Image 1 (cartoon, rainbow over the protein chains, first blue to last red):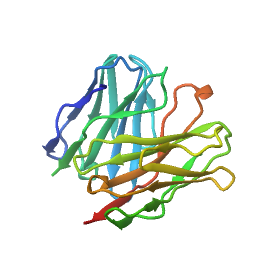
Image 2 (cartoon, each protein chain N blue to C red):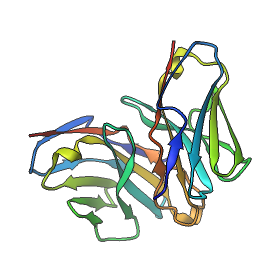
Image 3 (spheres, each protein chain N blue to C red):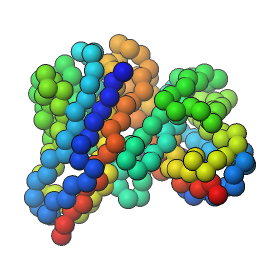
Image 4 (tube, helix red, strand yellow):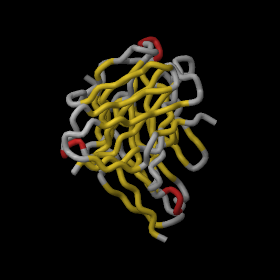
Length: 113
Length: 117
């Protein structure tokens, strides 16, 4: 079974803090994604990566950055957290070969106070 | 740009009955895939069913089936014999075909399905 894990299920941070969300997948997938999920807005893509050290902006990259130093790990960074970044963050991955299904992590509920 | 629209924010159905969730999409491509994902209250999103645009036959997975109307750009999900475990958020998603290489998914806003015992 493919496993996508995220470093925290729940996280509370203060405004202005630097926040790291980590995602690890164990199936050697080339492609990894970070989404933000908000009620009524569905899933919106923040950043994605097709390979190590490669990254591309998604639909809402402002206020976020990412890092992919190893194939299995994709980190989302909030440089200076703000209250409007309070949300559920979902990581996903898929193989370029079997590009039918994205596998999702359990999500991180981030609250910025 | 591709868009996916789910016009039903919430739906409910009696246990053992059938329910249909709606999804429409907009694209200028002819080669693409459509998906329904399920997100139970535990939050782990899982794939329910997928449809390749080039296939005329509607996809089926046990109690889940789709009604794919390519000309109308409609992709509805039918759940038969609804069970309590079907309660979840359901997301419709789109991606361009494999010829486009690595592609992102575009998601709809979701439909929350409640099962009434």
